[in-house]
Length: 202
Image 1 (cartoon, one colour):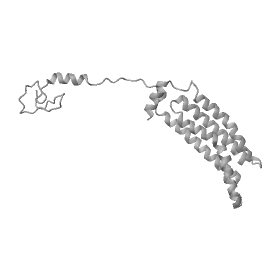
Image 2 (cartoon, helix red, strand yellow):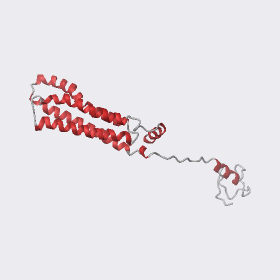
Image 3 (cartoon, helix red, strand yellow):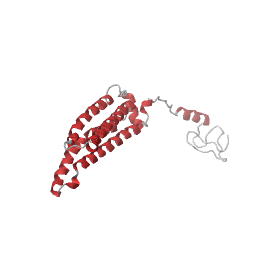
Image 4 (cartoon, one colour):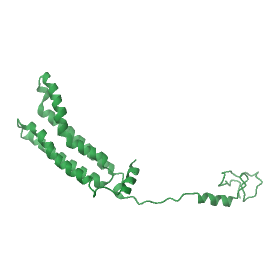
């Protein structure tokens, strides 16, 4: 037994001046072999768990894209709404009414995007949930942008402002379909997998 031997039981490093037998720890008087076996018995076994590929943390990136796309679409909608109403040409006393108009109808105009972005942040457990929301957001955004550009810039009309009231109704149909698919039994993971996914994403 060399002088550098360390006892597995008490972590005492054997010194050259120790008089105890080579097989025994001078500090705790225990046999090195028995202490080593005891230490090995205390090592916990690690159980390997098969992880569902759907629970890969990379799906957070897809949910983030949905949130950013929803935010960009909402901002562009408000920008086109502002351009269509042209508040810079209004008298100052009408600006207060315009602000109230934007708070009310503006919120309604971007409500589909608010719902999609909110759901994308909550339903990010699996790709089956995040993918329908992302596809739905893309389709709703494209339809909204095309309709607004067509109404405001390509074929402007005095009654074009009605589009900000009617368009959200049509967009909400797409939102309802996307959210329904994302919250369906097909898209939801099993309870155990969902718990594991939440633990991985924390």
